[in-house]
Structures are given as structure tokens and as C-alpha cells.
Image 1: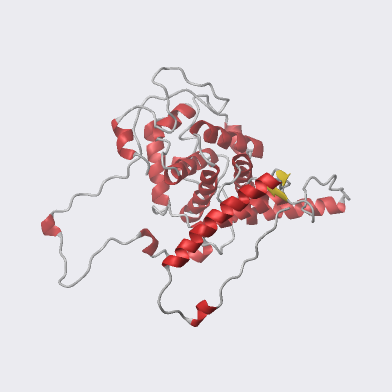
Image 2: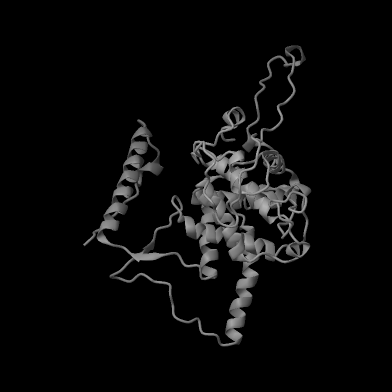
Length: 363
């Protein structure tokens, strides 16, 4: 889970952030705060040692550790019903957003509201418009906007206010200033959620893929723990999901002590406890299949399209087309190498029909 041993040994910063030894630190905007003393990392409690005499192996039986993907899920928590586990299950945030999208379209139709000038560009025979976001390399700014919009719909259209004390900001505040009780009675706006998440991603230097994995863990937590994300817990739930996603996704993860320099009045012990609870509620299921990741990416694009969050489109130039062709050629070469390695002396009738590809002509 991301450099747990070295973080416990050394109080210095993680190699990803590369903090200097001196006291000078950049002064971030309202969501960035001063460093908090302490240094530890969340490590699940080690199991009790078992004496060799206590191990009772039956004759002829094979004992092995069960892989996390082989665990049996509870009957009321079938994989097919969990969007964060199964690629065919529809995402929760997209279904929650459809109510507002339908009401907005209905209101515009009844009030004869014109959609205005069309800002979305469409391809033609002579011009092809493409954006710079792909499933393997999403655009960071657009992805964070979509993910925070999904969180906004989760809060706005929640079923109830079920929560846990570990995520309650009233019990575990993130700031030293006393937050008025009135603050927790109103749903946060999308721009406020975006500012909070963008600040964390900017300070911790996280990637767009980490934002998508964050949303996967968030919906998995809501499903497994049967809780709701609401004004009292959304910051800590999002923080826990980002913390876990950064450790799983990035090779050089951000340490827990680094978040204490980003957020104000939060201790390493608090971060460790929240991380442990988050993992336990997820049943330590941190696996994100590629099919689930792709589903969330394309559903986020659908969410952006429904809410007029258009990606930045640009016409396909000759230079850009050549770059895409070069990338495609590399992928094709890898595919050919795999096909050569799979050649056998005998073939089935299924292999007689090959896939024919036509070459694209760029003028």
C-alpha cells in the first residue's frame, strides 16, 4: 500500500512530492493548510503469530492462500449489482444524474428555452474533430470536473443520511476553525467540491486516472458499507478514496504525512485510522478491472455531455494524424508479436478466417 515501511522509518517527505528540508512551503489556496506534526502511516494490524505446532495439515490436502478475486461475496452483495465490481452494472452516479437531466430538458421544452449557440463541434467529410482525452490518458482538468460532478449528484440525490463516525467531519474536523452547524445542513455546490478535489490533486501531483479510480472506490464504499455521502461526511470520504487510489495507482504513492501538509489540523493518526476503516469497509477489495475502469470513463463522458461540460475539441491536423498513426503502428507490432508467439503446428477451423484491415490514406 505505498511505501509503508520507509514512511514509518523516515519522517521526511515522500519522493513524489520532493519536499525540501527547510521550513519554506508553498502557500496554497483556501484548501491548503500548514503542516501538522507527527509521522506514521496506516498499516493494518499484523496477525498474531502462529506456532508451527498449531498448524494442522491434513494428509494429501493442498493448502494455499485464497486470492482476493476468489472470495465469495455475500448473497445480498452480488457482483452483478455492484457497478464498481461488474462491468455490466450501471454506475450509480449516472443513474442519479438522470433525474436532474430529464427535469432540465423538460423545463427547457415547456418554457421554450432555446439551446443557444451550439458550441459542440462535429466532424465532417473534410474535417475531423478530436479531443485530447482518451481512456488510457484522460484529460486531468476535464476528468476532475466530471468526477466532482458525479460526487455532487451523489450528495444531492442521496437516499438518506446514513453515515459512520469515522467519516463525520463534526467528530473529525479538517480545519481548526469551528465550522457552524448550518454548514452541514446544505448540500455543497459543484464548484466547491471541484475546488477541494483540484487542490488535493494539484498539491499531491496526482493523475487523471487516479481521479477515476477514486470514484470507483467511493461508489464501492457506499455500496459495501451501505452509507450515504452527505454534507457531514463528503470531504472525509473523498479524502479517503483519493488517499487509497493514489497508493494503489501510482508507483510512488503520496504518504499519509504529506496530506497533513496539504490539509489543516489533520494528524497522521487520524489519516491512518480513516485508511484502516476505509479498507475494512471495502473488505480489502481494491481491485479495479480494466473493464470497470473503462465503463466509468465513458460514463463520465456521458455525464459531461448531459451537463454541457464539453471536452476541448481540435481539428485533426496532419502532424497529429501522423502521431496517432505511429502509436497505432506500435500497438499493431505488439499484436503481431503476440500472434507469432501463439502460432502452433496445428490450427482449428476458427483460425482459417483472419481479420482483414484496410490502410488509412492521409492526404
